[in-house]
Image (cartoon, rainbow, N blue to C red):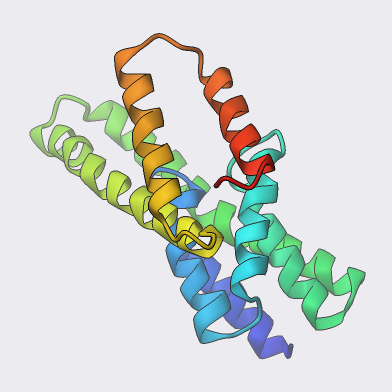
Amino acid sequence: MTAADWAGFALHLLGLSLLAVGGAMAVAPDLHRYLVVQQGWLDDAQFSASIALAQAAPGPNVLFIALLGWNVGLQSGGLAVAALGLTLALVGILLPSSLLTLALTRWAHRHREDRTVRAFKQGMAPVVVGLLLATAWIVATAQSGPHGLAPLGALAAGVALVVWRTRLHLLWLLGAGALLGGFGIV
């Protein structure tokens, strides 16, 4: 990768940072488009594995972006370049949104009773849900097995029903999902 490629990568993340409403996972579809489809720096398996590994590790969801930056750097030149990719990815995704959040939360707190502030909060909920569903679709299609998306869809619907209708602890559901995945069922 050239210096221009790295600058483009950093600028893309700086822009996405301001769109990461609902968390970093909400920008995964555009990151997939940029890194896999448009630039070809990663393939589908590397992208999905980065998300899966970062989600399995303890810590914030933003770890997957650091791992994507690491993998882009690793593909283009080894460990030193991987560290550069990781650093650019984290600074690019965290800095603009953090500064904007700091400024806007101070403003919104001062104006919390304004009609526009309340309308904005209510209007952002469907946007966040839509972005998270798009992320789930990309990850599911990359991980679909020989039976397609049917087992994953059935599992997701079943888990949603169990969460909605029972008080079963979520760790039991995570363990059941791990067993199903471990045995190759989904």
